[in-house]
Length: 113
Length: 110
Image (cartoon, rainbow over all chains, first blue to last red):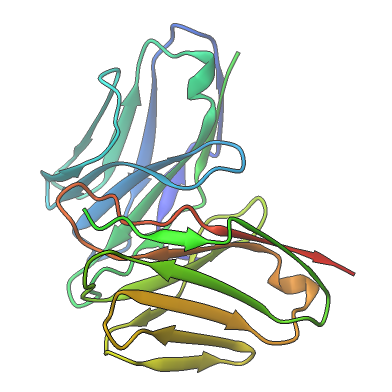
């Protein structure tokens, strides 16, 4: 158990809909990262937050947004969903003294039908 | 960002054979991290290398950081079916966060 909690584990929705994925980082970790992984693909970095502020932005679509709250949990919002958005979405966290080591949650599997 | 290149993308081995994956960067890295993702699972941190020329071992796994800190390798001796998965390297940091390699998929034939 990495200590990073992601909910829900599975999400099935229809095209055009909006969903919210939630991530609770490990206790004490200030950084949260979001990744998208399509079937047999690598980890596509979406966005990073550090203590509530956006730190780095990757290939995140305009239809996607995220935020980190004062209690450090984070949410990834995906809107106007398309079939191609079906993927595994991972959250990872890292903390002070851990350098660049990231601890991943179990992921949310999103299926857009 | 310091996106790293990983090779090979896929590696088929017979059980008991050795396996090596390589991670290369065009720039000097501060550190490098290795992760393993089992099929259907999530990436799990394996090790971090920080020093030039560093070699670390975990049972049958040997991790090496190049002298110039621009490349790294992961070598598995006598592969077992439990080694199946995708191995990622990550160069850490970077303003655009693009630090993970695309991974090497290890497929083991019994």
